Amino acid sequence: MRSSLLYVLYGCLFGCLLPVTAQPAEQSVRSVRSTPTAKVAPAIRVNVNLALVPVTVMDGEGRNVLGLTPSNFRVLDESQPRPIVSFNQQDAPVSVGLIFDCSRSMTQKYLVTREAPARLFAQLNPEDEAFLITVSDRAVLRTDFTSHFEEIQNALLFTHPDGSTSLVDGVYLGLQKLKQAHNPRKALIVVSDGGENNSRYTMRELSDLATEADAQIFTICLSLNPGTDEEVHGPDLLHKMSQLSGGMQFITNDLKLMNDALTRVGVTLHNEYVLGIVPPQTALQGKYRRIKVQVVVPSTLPRLQIFARSSYYVP
Image (cartoon, rainbow, N blue to C red; front, side):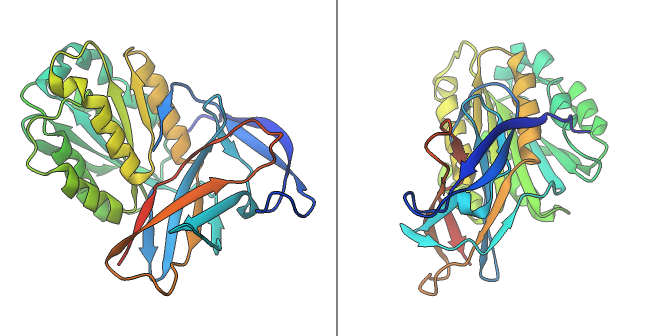
């Protein structure tokens, strides 16, 4: 079950979207504590004519900020403001795909990393579900959707790292698998050193699929004494994956900090805002549109971080 990490962080004033206008109303903002550092990078689904935009807001210490209202957000669609027509912050069930690097480059790290997903599953609810894809010479679905998360732990326990790394293929397969999810909210969590060297899909193909998908991609990069060019460039590759979907990237050179990263992802999955906008009538079907989500709070508050994807697909 998810640990209750919520506590009151702010008692503060929030105004309307324009900086120097009406008097702000009083409101409470709560934060959820987690740990390691995140690099930027949620997913959007255009349903009929409504685009749903998951958004994560964090304070300077990496805690999820709760208690915001629609007036605290501004959405720019191709640089033009769009009204927020729906707003949600429910703790809804989530479907999670775990993409786990089990290639030869992970050999020295695997005994520790294979235990870390237990920290993620501790934050999930009985209504949540997850599957496991392992990546080596090829990407393989090892455990189908289940709410018995110990099945995934057991599969990792009896896996031995070997072979090359088909990481892009693994994420591509994960996004396709999420189309069968039973919950509307979806996420992929990628654990790897980023040493891609054997995929048949390209990053361009992955980018197209990720932009159309309504899933966030969270990446956890194990940057420990990279020995190959692929591993050196691994953090950049994983950062691109998380950016595609408005997810978050965590980089660590300490295997023990993986526990903190996966705990933080689990907390974040159940503490997001979902903003709904209607694409303009001029939006062309089959095209991508750029968006930017901004958080609007009084300047007296500490600076907040916002994680939201930068484009969506009009079907």
